[in-house]
Length: 224
Image (cartoon, rainbow, N blue to C red; front, side, top):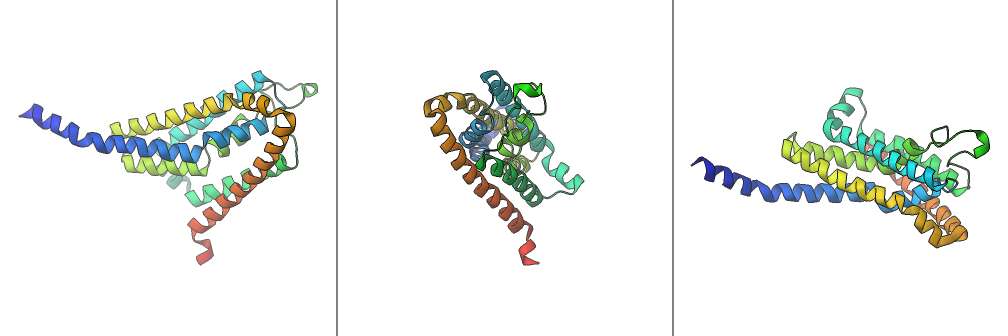
């Protein structure tokens, strides 16, 4: 009697778990947006050599993955303990992203320092943590998605494992997109890349504004 019961339970739970994995993967793919991240990565690392771009891509994805895993495991509790709401995360991340987008539009250097400065890729010009890892890859949208999906997993071991699996697949896709950004740059050439970078800067400014407005809207500040 025990074996059929277990088998039936597993079969009954399989569709919800597979749906949970697919829904989590889709949510992470949309909010992380590997294509957009790769395009911005190309703009931010335009002054770097291939070794620097490879190092920055790997480090930024690793840091973003670690950050999102923390929120997947402790997101609700962490924000509650330190007294930060998700709308606050949206507004703060949007402001930081707005500052980065302004530099991109006006052609200010955001990438690695020139060799004359004496700093390597690990020095002051390291942009892997900010703004690449956060708020571009692991931005407020991705953090929100991870936190919401984690709350739906309700600390169940299998569901949490599937959540982390979906996140891992998306981050591998993101890493591949970042590593391929240099090839895309060669295809477009310097002039084409310059045009694309400026357009992306404008779009990134709009995205940052949307994040800020969404944060204010979710906070209910306009209703007070």
